Length: 265
Ligand code: SAM
Image (cartoon, rainbow, N blue to C red; front, side):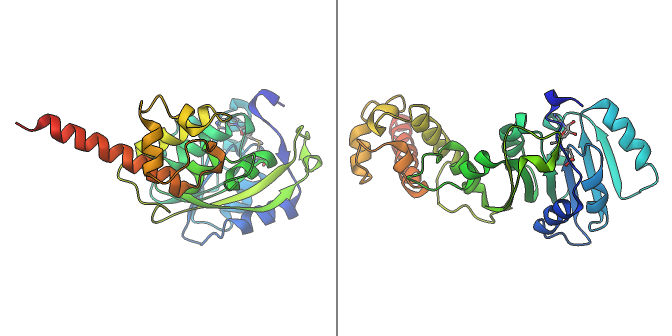
């Protein structure tokens, strides 16, 4: 057992069944499983989908999986680090996985990349991370992860799993979350990168006022916030996605206007 690789296995068939149900699979679906481990969930997924692509990093587990599923055509085992897997080369797919917690955020951000044809992700994650993902403005756990995930998907917590359900038990409780990719973002922005930059800059100094934390973006940020109708003494965790979008749009517009003027003859 390699705790370093976040190896906590689920064997309880009723919990595995609830995870599979939460994914709303159709017989024609392509499913990616990250970290199949001992292959219990993998087998159940293959009964409900057209194909399962299972990515396992541990070479010993991987060898066992290759042996166990060598005759199951619907299951493809890939022995590699999920963070290096070329998801953008796949046709549209759903992810169902009890993921290794030490790389939860990098996995989620990789799946949300705009080149990746993700339909939905049903993930077992740390309960505290699940709460951060669904958090709304005003909550202590509202931040970059909440805004990024909610920009790309509609997240929901489906059910919780107590730590004792895993072998060996981790130090934290878990939740199964379902992320459904949005067809259209919930706010309209001229430049997504600017939106993410504003959000990250604001939360890099969470306890400071916006006038203070956003200063690296513009010297006259105070005036810009006032012109968006946002009080500059507010803290980032009180702002809705819509308000972050307003700031980003004004910053992009002023940058465009400035570039336009500079290029005039
Ligand atoms: N799916 C199994 C289950 O539910 O019993 C195992 C889940 S366990 C929490 C996480 C799995 O991810 C382990 O099998 C571990 O070896 C694998 N893993 C860890 N790091 C990985 C990585 N970078 N890429 C792919 N798999 C990884």
